[in-house]
Image 1 (cartoon, chains in turn purple, yellow):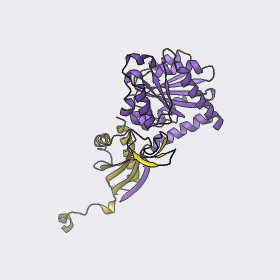
Image 2 (cartoon, rainbow over the protein chains, first blue to last red):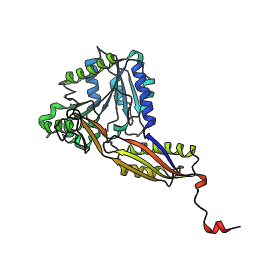
Image 3 (cartoon, rainbow over the protein chains, first blue to last red):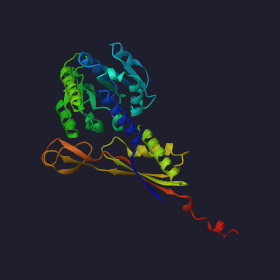
Image 4 (cartoon, rainbow over the protein chains, first blue to last red):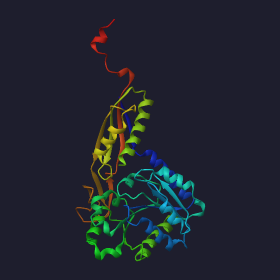
Amino acid sequence: MEIDLSRPILARNEGLARKNRERLAAAGVFAVDILASPGAGKTTTILATIERLRDRYRIAVIEGDIASRVDAEKVASHGIPAVQINTGGACHLEADMVGRALDALPLDGLDLVIIENVGNLVCPTEFDLGQDARVVILSVPEGHDKPLKYPAIFALADAVVLNKYDTLPVFDFDEGEFRESVARLNGAAPIFPVSATKGDGVADWVEWLAGRIEAARTTT
Amino acid sequence: MHEMGIVAEVLAAVTTAAESAGAVRVNRVRLTVGELTAVVPDSLQFAWEALAPGTPVEGAVLEVVETPARSRCVDCDLEFEHDRFDRRCPACGSYLCEVLAGNELRIDDVDVDLPDQAPVPSPHEATED
């Protein structure tokens, strides 16, 4: 006998992501999921973003890592509430982990939650967390061919940050080719060249994010 | 290796469906996986062989149907198939195209044996008094 199921494989995660999204929307909190490989500068970009936005928005960070509290401590040392999720080996965050992290945050006193996903350009792709926007960070030393190796994650990005842009002169990184391959996957995503350590380009990226936060506020 | 987690979800859903149907055996599970996902069918098979033994789904065949990617151009309205690396419109060259198919990650159906359909007893058993 054939049993017709016709359901998403990740129905459970999708249901929990929907719950997170409703909870965030009810509290008026915008959530952005930051995706990148290890070492691309996720935490540094997040800290640079916080410095520019902390006077405008009340911010908290959810740090996803396989192990350690290093990143959460780094964020907390800047006076920003941070919750560390240790996935205990899992290569990506899932909606239930983010839901538990949201339990630990004072949502009613927040405007923006930045979720730093586990460093990985493959596994997080299929797992909705309930975020409002997904941003992929690629750093110049990783090479301009990465969109061709990890197409799925670039295809779903709402924006792409090209970090360590100040190192462009010393790496064989073809920016034109990078932009073309991202556009062929995702013509709607803007690309922001940034040097998170030096601050160059951070303003443009941050203004885009603030624009998204404001747009979400006017529609709710 | 997020395919492990994906297969674990499939096993849980299929076990629930088979149990509520009163099935005695699961023969086949069919999934649809879109070409644009980051899910590798070979890795699903590997995870299936690792995780299914010891569950009520043990012994079932995993069938993975891959769906090609298809998009519609926002500018000229053309619908076209494309690979996972390039969804630029082949007619007008626009980069703004919306995906219509290719992101599926779905359990379609499950083939099970119910108690009354259990394999016919062997002739030896059937002739026994």
